[in-house]
Structures are given as C-alpha cells and as structure tokens.
Amino acid sequence: MDVRMLGRAAGRFQFAGTIDVVETGEDALAAVGRAPGFELIVLDVNLPGISGLDVLRFLKSDMRMRAVPVIVFSSSSDQQDIQRAYAGGAAAYLTKPVGLEGYDTVIAGIGSFWSSVVAYASPGQSPLEDLPELSSSSDPAAR
Image (cartoon, rainbow, N blue to C red; front, side, top):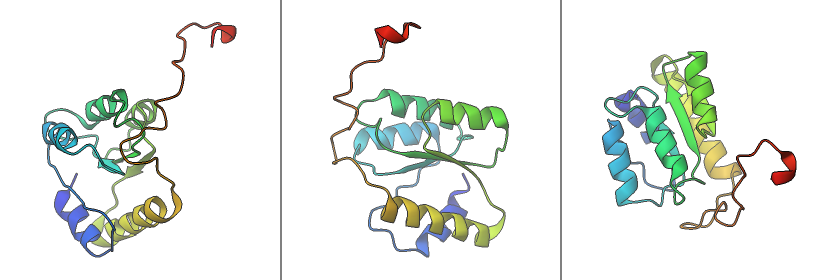
C-alpha cells in the first residue's frame, strides 16, 4: 500500500480512532497481536513478506479478529485477487485510485461509511462467538 498517499489522505479527515500504519505482512500480524481492539482494517494484497491475503486468512481464523471488517485496498484489479479476498472474508475490495485526489475520495468514503453507517460488535466480543459450528457435510440436513 502506498503508505504516504494513504496517510496524507487520512490526515485530511477527522477520524475518531487511531490510525496505525504498517508496511509488511509481518508488521501487520505483530500489530494485531499487540492491540487486538481494531474496529476496521485496511489491507493491501501485495504487502512485502507475508501477503495481504495470508494476513486476511489469519485475521479471519482468529476468533478475536473475525468480526473486524477488513477492506482490501490494492493496486491489483486481477479477478483472482478479488475473488480470493472475498472468499477469505474481506468486507470490501477497493482498487487504489490514481493521484492524491482519488485517495481523498476513497478515504472520505471509507470514513463516512465505516464510521457513520456501520454498527460494530462490542469491543472484545465477537458476534460470531455464539454461532454454532457449520458442518462440512454436503447434506443440508446436517447443518
């Protein structure tokens, strides 16, 4: 993710929370391990080291992080990347815009929708904790 462009655009808008920026997949996993109370994660597919899609798979396999929406934000418009992101649990897939004005538009939209419209689970409690496990059987009666 072009951290400078995203940071500059985010700096122009008022966000209630803290914005943590990391540059590698390893740094992303470390940040989540240190402070699991995230409300929203914006993740690049093409992170150096551990890929963004691998980070996404980890986040969605961790019960503490499963309910946190993850927006995949990438320069890739490859349909396989998009399909893998949604299959991995991404809440949205956004293709990086060109230029600072495009970043402003995207960040304003993310901020408006995810801070004003979306209802979040209580911090530290996943709404998925009380859901029954889904059966891997192909028999609908077994579910």
